[in-house]
Structure formats: C-alpha cells, structure tokens
Image (cartoon, rainbow, N blue to C red; front, side, top):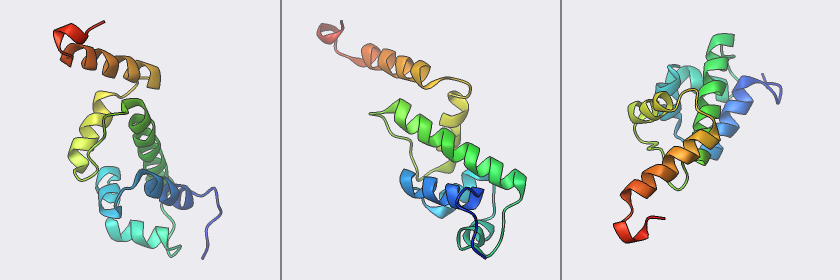
Length: 115
C-alpha cells in the first residue's frame, strides 16, 4: 500500500537518503526495529504515530545539527555517538550551535591566528 507523500514513512526515507544514513543506523538511533523500518519504507507496514514522530523528529534534528556543525560532521557509523551529539545540543538553535563551534575553532587555533 503506497503512503501519502507527507506520511512519516515517506518523509523519513527522504531525510535518511539526504543525510546519507544507513537504515540500520536510523533504526538504532530512533529505537525502531530495523525490519519494521524496512517494511515501512517499502510501504508494507505503517509506523505507529509515536514511531513516526520519533523518526521525523530525530532525523530533522540530525539534519539541522549537520548544517549547524558544518564543517564538522556527525559520525553516521555509530548511533550512540550521534545520540550523544543530539543530546549535547538539545534545545540549542542553529545559531547557538554555530557560535559554539566557532568558539571551539578559536580555542583550537594557533596563537597567531586568533582574532
């Protein structure tokens, strides 16, 4: 059964592809069974409202963090590490994250390069 284009399943699959994430990573970080996710992405099973919300919320936060942390990257091979980044920046706006990353680079810059 095909899902509507605004369904959590369709939106999550697009976000996952845009982020370049593996399905196993998404299943682990969103606490959804990998086979459930596979069936949902193939249109064979709907996710519960809770699962869909958790999936969209987490992937949207990851996309925002990816953009805000640039040029740094989130390790998409380790769901626990990525969850740590999500937790560390929970509640911060993209601008606040940018500022903190900028400060980090200032702290790491050689003495002569600090402005």
